[in-house]
Image (cartoon, rainbow, N blue to C red; front, side, top):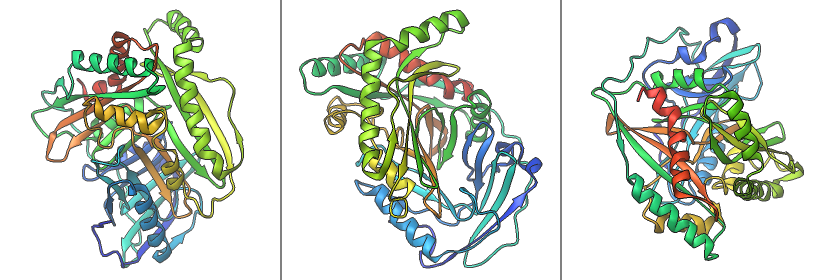
Length: 421
């Protein structure tokens, strides 16, 4: 696993309390160069700079990253005056969806600013030395994307609808129960895109989602793969979607339809079962609700279930290890997962890269939050004026290609609108 700094150099980490007023709008603190983001309801973490950035690939990419992190934590010299989850030594991460191809990364920033309720803090990290502090001021104002144009991606509407129909046929033949198909769009501008522009708009428009940015991948995901905090583990499972109309009464009726849809309830059951089965070996007790609730977002509504448990092996299993055990869940892969992922490749679908892979953060104790990189897009590292947008749909026996095409279009909305496309 490669790193951008001498892997033997100990990281020196210092965390101090901040006046919460200075961190009231975390996303506004970000500089243009290398911002890192994990925010929900105005709270969370923003960061910048790079003390280390190891990359990994292949089937052991999450395990390799977890091992590197454990070794780095063991060498670190930490002065943490706050002592809360998310303070002290911290990394952000983004991982490829599939074993091959894919590139995954952990980023240890130089400066982290965090806020939770009335508590705010700043952490500085440097290789081989302590620093006294960092300048904390608002970043410059990002500019809107210039001359943005959106075009089709790897599969046009007809080809993708054909893939959905083929998947339904395979499910009907008994080859599998569910498969998740993804598609992309390409947005291009006449100048490099400043990721802070869409991030600010996602934070404002989707406050109940987890807005993220790591190494060019950004979005606002409604789905939390796993959170581990002081022995408690939670996972928010989403599967089953219906598009909102903007009419309150109509949307309430649609929510009722979704809550009683046999197709969507079947899809949701597969996803919840896969998460509960993956977490059960690590938990002394678990709570798996019998029925989902309807999660209302500005563009769509989802069937949602919050699975919770008490981790009995937290000293051995980090939040990233739990994410590795959960990924890919049925919500983003299918059921049975191995067969579903193989079918996706067989249908000639687009390479997902880090779309629908784990994204989030972890501290030195192994606590952290890892979302699923949905409602997301990736800035092309070779051409920062080009962005790929992603959306996916769970296909089961009753799926209709036209309806799935409309669902995918709805899932593109958050990032498209944030970019101005």
